[in-house]
Image 1 (cartoon, rainbow, N blue to C red):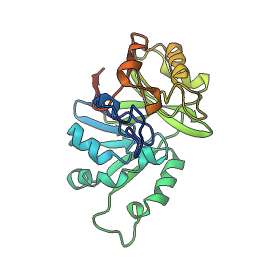
Image 2 (cartoon, rainbow, N blue to C red):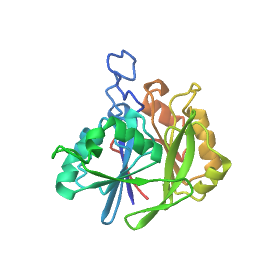
Image 3 (cartoon, rainbow, N blue to C red):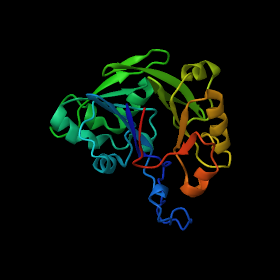
Length: 254
């Protein structure tokens, strides 16, 4: 299975519009981060986790030509605002399955009502098939099973996902022990770390490292990164040897 990091930034991306912060002015391509998302693929199958406002740009940069479905972690705009841009996939492939918590589906129906319209539907509108995710109920994508992992983003429930020996968790602040048990014997864990300072609804760097030490994957990649965390190369040098700062367009094989 291949994992392609489409975006590794926080909700504003890096650089932030109008910012004079030194990281925002960096010329290192690893310091330029679109909104957070990954593309996972294996023989005959291709799925995306989250579909933020940079989705079109990410699909072009990655040369992703086929998406069999989109898994949504939660409803925040930096994870969902690109839904309209699935249309080229609709035109080639037909209806796009989207997988999400019922609350997220209802939120998308309000924000993208024209997508879900059944009468007087605009013929060029995106077309989706909704599949509700429920905690503790694994579900199939292609020929693999996904285990949903329930985490909390402040007071908001968010789903992470485990597929085989890979797990993807973003916007995590707290997680119950029973959910941590779902993450045993991972080869790769992807988890968020916003900055060094504490944050109300995201892991900071130390919390993420403590969580990685608890889960003990073979390798871990940090994502959903703020410019405040610092320059990619400087931060990477300070991380444990099996922990990596992810960057846009990084591809790994599991």
